[in-house]
Image (cartoon, rainbow, N blue to C red; front, side):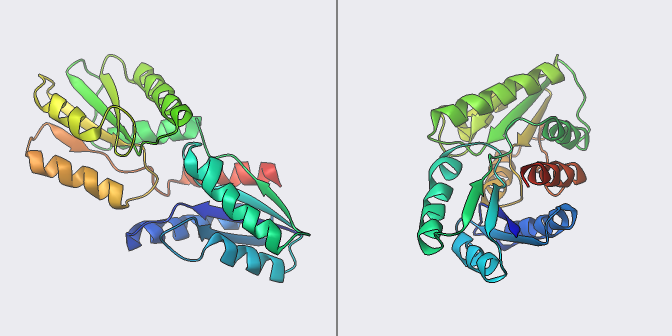
Length: 240
């Protein structure tokens, strides 16, 4: 039997973990497998090894591991593979199939644009979109995020789009909002490239509230949008 293990990052914020769990339950209903489980990489339970154990106990001979991550950075390239190495030592007869993170997807671009529209965004020259990524010390991940930002910028012309990072990366979020505050833009939209409302999203909200500038508007995270559910379920089913 082939099992699916959906892996989320994990957060110190309970509501963010709950959002992932709810998302996982909905995705699981659309997956073409009898055994669908979810786990967290860190900061929350159940862990990957906890759920691998359950999959094996329930009769799985192969486990498809799908990382619910936006970009391929350290977690996807190193941390999850390291955990799976431990799993392979514990269960040498089980086959593990690690899938890629989400990467560039049209569905995600559409959701991002809708998050702006929800805040009455209009494509105008006097509008600035600050596209905020988590950030990484992985150069390939930074380059990929920059390409995503450039593509988004093409869709939002003639409005301007600037990308920045919360952790890692040269352009910091704090520097970007400081620069934007000194600009002549009439509308400044903060667009988080984050899946759920965790600690990083709260950091964005706090930083914007502290500058007390009415031009700044914070959009919602990607969240458990139905298009995300369909996208993840489709990618998982393709891997089965």
